[in-house]
Length: 293
Length: 292
Image 1: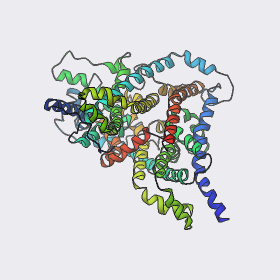
Image 2: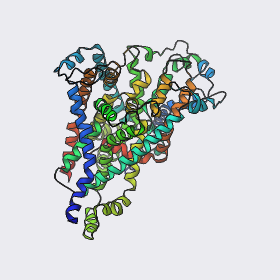
Image 3: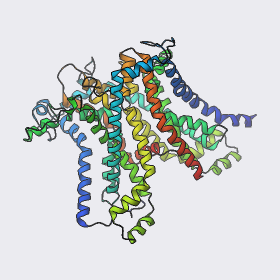
Image 4: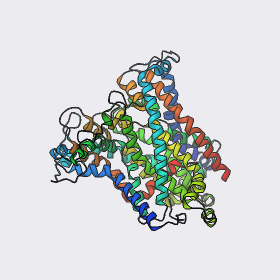
């Protein structure tokens, strides 16, 4: 999304422009509202939420809900806070992102620079795989994970996320490498460079932006996943999204709204930080996900 | 010898990924399809019963509620997200100061898990502590907003949260489209004395047809897959009032031990998505090839 041509702007009067800005600001508030609610109420004591106004800033700030959400609140049967689940998510996300990005780069390289018969069919099948409803694979995947001895483990989740991420990572790298001059690759080959030498010395060094796009895309998707986590994790491999849902929707005990909000922010923080730091690349991934071919 | 090997390396490199997709996507689709034709309950079994599961599925009240909810949710979600996205994109395309900041704010919900935003919306819409209570505090004693607890209206609270989450994404798609519009066309229309409103209505918005199509495809496929947000906000309740196909599939397969019926509902979801995605991808790839 470049800001190249800005000349479509209407020729508008001052009043009109003021209205446009007012609307834009209204929507800024609208989009920030849930985030504000979470932050403000995560800093209030529980009585203040019960008796008070959810939109108001906290009258007496307390960090106790954050401490509780992180390390002491009851999640499921154990009073461990969300910390162990946060760690599970990290242990799941890092290998899944690295593996699927690396394989996607290799696939994109093969599909664009080593044309062979059937390459388009291969790509078409991988592309279509991006859009399946994952409900369709839950039953057989549960069986296969059981057979491999990976049921309810973090390596099992890494495998699932790597496989179902391949379609998108391959798509990203394929479209990027399609625009990379094939002559450079051919010239290197004539000089005797092997398949992997071409990949590591010529393509990878110029793949910076697409690697960032892919890593952010995969990181966001895997971190935010709920369905696979809920289906294939067990007590000691539960990712943070599932743990958060267990915390908020548990039917026992007092509902500690402030702890729920603090926990929700904790679960959102990693992807939110990545988005704020490198939103441009995140948007590129989203756009590539919408406009294919 | 070395050259022969070099010829095979690319295929060997691609093979594991391709095999994984063939087995774990297409093989699994076939397997689930097979299970939908069997009498599987808690565990898969191979007793063939034809289309009995599908007959049973479409006779189930829960499934029909799920389809009706998907229809209500999908229609409102697609129409309102597209309209809001286009509206915001047009506003943002008027040489706005701080455009980058505003865009970042409009789009951040897409970076967050539906479970997280579900928590915020669940409690904000909760009559006891959320919006209703807040309005009472502000002195508007008669204000009532109990949709999330109301069997007939709870589905609309899911719509509200889902639009909040995805409309920024649609905005970004339209903004990219608007930035691609040729200035000359607009200048010519302005010379002819067309008003700004007319230029948008007659010239620019009709040129956004491909973006409408992309947005429609993306939003439809997200609507059919909706699962996390429902689990986080209502858990499918009150009662089963916000059941959707994705939550139906999960509960019939894993908690009600009706795997055959669950598998058949997954197949129906797949058919719904593929009937939109396959023609779209096919035309996109063909258009891409024609350009070259």
